[in-house]
Image (tube, rainbow, N blue to C red; front, side):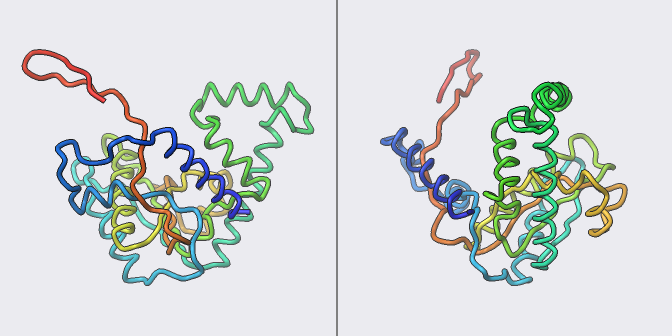
Length: 257
C-alpha cells in the first residue's frame, strides 16, 4: 500500500514539473551550486526504504550534525532516542493505526457511527483550539494511516525521536527544527533518505510510549526523523513555486520573486 502512495507522490511531482517547466534552476548569477547548496536543493522526503539497516557509526554522525545546530544561548533544548528494533517499530505502527481509527470515530463527521453533529461539534471545537492540526495535509495522512494505506515510519529501519526540553529558552521548537534540518541534510549528503514525522504525537495520547521509551520531565515528544536507504532515486532538484520577497535597501522597497 505504501507503493501506491509512493506512486501518487511521484505523479504529483511529475505534474508539478510540467506546471513549472522551463523555470530556471540555476543560481541567480549563473554560477554552479556549491556542494552545500546542492545537498539542500536536492534533498527530498523519502517514504520507501530498502530492507537494510544503517550502520550505527553513520547514525551517530547524523546525531552529531544535529547537536551542532544553532540554539538560543546554546541551550540545546533536545534529547535523542534512536529506535532500530523492528518489533518495537511495528508495535508503534499498530498503536498509531488504532489511534487514527479512534480519532476518525470521534472527529470525522462524514463516516463516524456517532452521526453527523457530535463529530462535527468536536471537530469545530478542536479547530478553534488547535486550528493547524486539522489542516487537510496532516488529516489526509491520519485517514490514510487509519485505512492501512500509509505507515507512520514508511518502513524505515532507523527512527530518531527528537525530544523537546521544557527548560529550553526562547523558542525551543525552532531550535529543534534547526537540529532536525542539520540531521536530514547530513543524512542526504551520505546517500541516505529521511522523512520528518510530526504525526508521532499519535503515540503520545496515552502514557504507554512515554513509559516504554523512558520519556520523563523535563522532556516531551516533539518530532521524529526516519533514516534509511531509499528505494530508487527519489532525490533531485525540482522546480518549486516561488514567493514574494521584500527588499529594503538604499532607502526604498522593492519586491522580487
